[in-house]
Image (cartoon, rainbow, N blue to C red; front, top):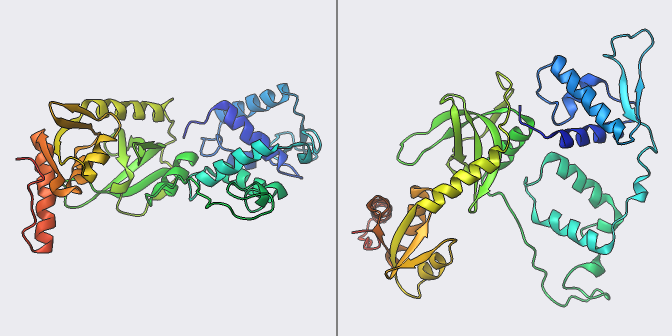
Length: 345
C-alpha cells in the first residue's frame, strides 16, 4: 500500500467525517479515506483508526458516534463530526493576495496534475463567488479596474504531457498495482511490466514512475514516454508499502547519474544548438568543447540528433554512434543522402 503520512491520513479522515450528515461506518471510512484504502483488514487497521480518532480528539475535534440498538460490535456504528464543531465555512476568508496566490496555483497545475483531493478542494474554491471563473475581472493581471484590457494575459502552465501520467499517479495515490507494455531503447518489441507504483516524479522536464518491478523483484524507474500501452491498474496481489522517501531517493539517484554522465560536443557558434545547449543545467566549456550532462544516453542522443550538422559528438563514442544511427535512419526514411557529419567520427 502506498505510504501516506499520519497527518495526511488524519486530515483525510477529518474531511470524511465532516462531509456527511448521517455518518460513516468504519468499513465505509476504510474504503473512502486515503491511508486506509487497500490496507489489509485486521487488528493493525483497527488500531490505526483508533489512533487517528484519538489524535483528532486531542486537537479538540468532537467525533460523534451513533450505534444501532443491540449492536455491541461497533461494526455498524456511524462516525461524524457534529455540525458547527469546526465553525461555519463562511468564517474561512481569504484576502485579495491569498486569493491571487490560490488562483494562480490552480491555473498552473491542470490536466491531471493535481491529486483527487486537491481537485475536489479546487472545485469547492471555484464555487466561491470570489473565485468564479478565476479571479474577479477587476483583479485579473493585465486589466484595469474599469475592465478595459491593457495587455495580453500570459499564464504559466504545468502540463503532464505523457499519456500514462494520470493513470499512474492515480494508482500510486491509491496503492494499486499497474500493468503496462514498456519499450526499452534497442529492443524491437515491448515487454509487459507489472509494477507496484511508489511515486510519479518530474526530473529535468521528463515524467517518470518510481516503483517495484514485480517480475524483476527490484526497484525501477520507468520513463513514461516509453510506456506504449494503456495503463491497467488492479488490486495488488499482496499489500505493499512504499519505502519512506522513495521519490526523494529516486531523484537523488537520477541527479547522481546526471552529474556523472557527460558528452563533449563541437557546436556551430551562434546556432540554435549553441544557444540551447549552453543554457542546459550544468553545461560547461572545456578546451573549446561544450560539455553537457545527461541521465540517459538514448534521450540525449535523440536531442542531439535533432540539431543535425550543428553538433558533432567528440566523446564518448557510444553516444556518437547513437546519434549517427538516428541521423542515418532519418536519411534512409527520406530516401536521400542526408548529411550525417553531425555525429561523432
